[in-house]
Length: 570
Image (cartoon, rainbow, N blue to C red; front, side):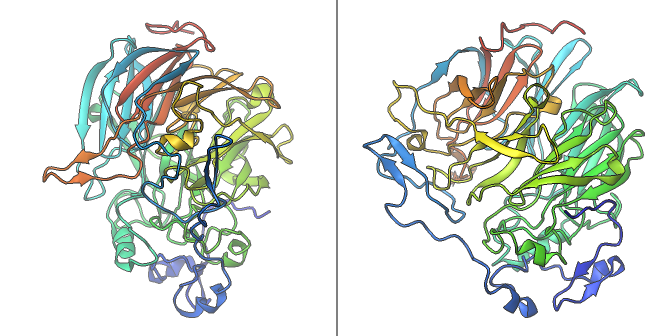
């Protein structure tokens, strides 16, 4: 197992296999092309001829809905494919029914931050609870003190064309040492719309590399619920060669919601520089790593160490080629989210868990954040297309010894292998093992379909929310997940060997296509999917479901009676 710590003087493999030191980084090739791809230019061409190439279109009849069994057979593999892929048995309409089990709808609000994925964060301020629901180009801020009567506090949109003006995923925590509310907000280069296809559009690659923006994170003091009032304390670039004030910066920037608990350490995901390029995904240039920072002084964060999956970087092609996904122009390789940490370092926590896309599952020793290193690894089953691993639920590890690993679908109408949620036994963290998968949701008997793959849109798990920013203590038994066209599903993992589905809420399907100002239809692949995100208030027994047509506030008997005001102080 390769162990890496501080990111200093990285080796860079130039075309022709010449090794350059980090001092020559500015002169290194910046094509952004995956040099392992079958059509790689120059001297690497011969070296990559035997790599597999893009998955073929599955043969007719090799997958689809079986009317005799009422089940859908997923394809073994598919190329990255946008848009609808209906088969015989697919509904010719969007189902307008709603389905519930052990769930009550307490409220519905017609606010939508993003018809695709959106992020959420909540925090308490002056005796009231606030919720952000946001995408990079807009946000809604709500007062949710009374969850049956949420109030709009602020709504804002951003012009993101320049890259800098955006609203990044963030985490807010109370810092006891400073006696202040502290927010950490990530800024990442766009995953969509900037690079159409890095294998065919080199001009897009240069545009992405030269884009002027902060590729890192900002830290704020939260002085009011409104983001526009927050006090900026620091700006930090993930790029070790360029400060936050220098442009352009290298790498991806800070990916997704940062892992911060209000203490000394901050963990983020991202590619620190332009050597982290061994990823197949067509519209993205980077293979994300895991980074640790000391933020005991939020005004002066200190970089501690960087760990990455072997094969992520230029110079690691021999390791990369061992992966069966190498060369397929489809798989996301590397992190999308930071480490999932069940117990903080200050509380004696020793391990974090990393979902590294096509690189698989890793157990990372975090006991000394200045020396992040892997102690165990599992090569997860190949499931192309779609995201193969970006979320790990660690909320049950203390009660059951299990963590739950999942990716999510990227195609509609189940035009890809079925995405599973894997139960991984980490009681022996040096020897983790896959135990089983959580049950696949099935429609209720009164639904006009027998398999969710017929319902249109995408089917599969998204995430169980963001445990580090959801208030309260998660249930040791129940685990809610957002599940695209299957809504919100709650799994009962009291017996990890026999998990069941205890409750669900499946809202109606809505065609969320939008009209532009000139009357053209804005077509986005994921718009028909009703549910991408959920947010759980464990201290109030409430689940917020963010759909493409509004926000549902749910209670459920499996979690207990809901709290409709502020929760009791502890």
